[in-house]
Amino acid sequence: MEKMTKVSSISGRTMFCHLDAPANAISVCRDASQVVVAGRNIFKIYGLEEDGFVERLNLRVGRKPSLNFSCADVMWHQMEENLLATAATNGAVVTWNLARPCRNKQEQLFTEHKRTVNKVCFHPTEVNMLLSGSQDGFMKCFDLRKKESVSTFSGQSESVRDVQFSMKDYFTFAASFENGNVQLWDIRRPDRYERMFTAHTGPVFCCDWHPEDRGWLATGGRDKMVKVWDMSTNRVKEIYCVQTIASVARVKWRPERRYHLATCSMMVDHNIYVWDVRRPFIPFATFEEHKDVTTGIVWRHQHDSEFLLSGSKDSTLYQHMFKDASRPVDRANPEGLCFGLFGDLAFAAKESLMTAPPSVGDVGRKTYPGGDRRYPIFFFKKPDVTAQFAQVSSALSVFESEAGSSVGMDWFISTAQSYLLSGKPFAELCEHNAQVAKKLNRLQVLVLSAKAL
Image 1 (cartoon, rainbow, N blue to C red):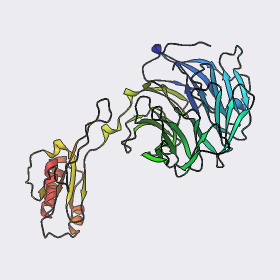
Image 2 (image 1 turned 90 degrees about the horizontal axis):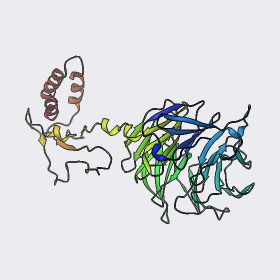
Image 3 (image 1 turned 45 degrees about the horizontal axis):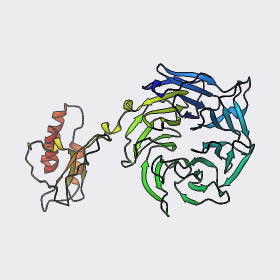
Image 4 (image 1 turned 30 degrees about the vertical axis):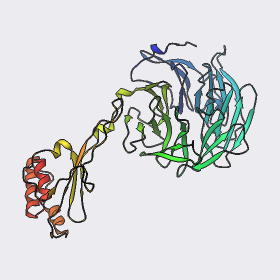
């Protein structure tokens, strides 16, 4: 098998290649020069070169490959460059040695699980330790020097969707379950979990330990949420929650960016999102290349936060360059208005709009300096330049009805009947609507119409 050893020679751009079949999972080798793509009908290794992805090795051998080649998950060992593990849809856990001289690289075959294996995970520092989680509700720990598992963990629950060894605590792993629970286990005590908590409403499809913060665990579920838990205290504490638009299939912390993580969805939404968990309602960045569900995401290198690899059901493999991502915040509208119960109106806009000179008169308008706690001027704190979201500064003004004015809603019906929203040039629409507001004595609305002009 052809090999590449220098990370510096790897392509530094967004690129993709077409696969023979849909991908279920991907994993990258330690030096980030090669990526393995696995699925029901594909199991190949690709090199990353300046000209793009180059197929290095097809691991599906034989005229009729067995179901051991039908992979639900794959992981490349981060200490042993020739060692891979796969989770098969027939319940097998298989290890592969790329250094074997023959075409068939299969080394170990474990057939103890009774249903599909959803996840495999190598220990980050123990070369021969492999963990699996299956649809049968069991987790198994294998010593690759032996022919069978050395420990079996029963979650006493529904199927195991993900298992992940802690990056910092040698003996600890987390497991997420179909029933919404997450369990923490000590590999030395297979008889009972250390702690358990309900993380999501419905299945927890994925979890990922933070590479730096010892106790942070991110989870994603069918409830369309990503949650970050602090496990370092006696009581598990939810510290961040991100609301997405579809069920969360994968979650991966971004290297060297403490608050960033990437997600992809199990259905409906094909995009990959990178979130800053401190600002949970709008993604920091979005990759929109895939045309079908994204099934696998992995950062190219544990010390490189600028490249993300992904595989999809659309039978493509992508390397995304972070600077090529779209930024949803650039398209966000920093303006808005809200009508109050007693006829007052709050209007938020970019400060450049709010400082425009009044043209119709500020009748009914009250401006509130920053010291007034009732109606402060709101603005976002200036971000760190290495940061992050584009700076958006909005100001808030409040317009109040005159004392003793009627708070009836007849004016609202008349406004809806008389306003024009199309059919004329924008300036004429604003002038017409301003006159309607003036006749109805809605002077605060009149000011807004005048500013639009």
